[in-house]
Length: 220
Image (tube, rainbow, N blue to C red):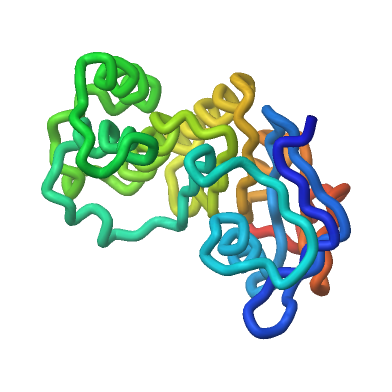
């Protein structure tokens, strides 16, 4: 059974920018989304995350609480005066509410997630002391604590060192093997080809769901 279905879907703001005849994801799918700047990748993500309504067509997807969205990096997010552990722990708020109290059962998966992302030794540091790669790993760790059924990742590997890319890709693949579907905006042709099973490409206002990463449209 499909987890996500897009049929005759038009997305845009005042005017359609992108049309999708038919696309789908099943649990565990890993899909790389490519396309030139301004082609509609961000507009599609804004539609899938509910920030803007679709202009027409059919969109089936999990409830909002089952969708994990990682936007592009923002340095402002690191101004929160909390530790790395508290930041990742706060991922539980997504399902339980902003004022939920956390217990030992909530903390155990956070410890495991920090270890998976090689952040356990940094767990008591404030977010502002993390490097760019460590911060991006912490952002993804917080998202995976939510146990989403569908991950939407917007250029998660940009400006990261090779080690952080490797750690994050391993975690993404592990999540997909556990049944989480992944749609990831990418510009790195190596990662698109090696880390993802399927490829969607946007060109001239259309989504090609049988595409392969093309060197002339991707930038390392």
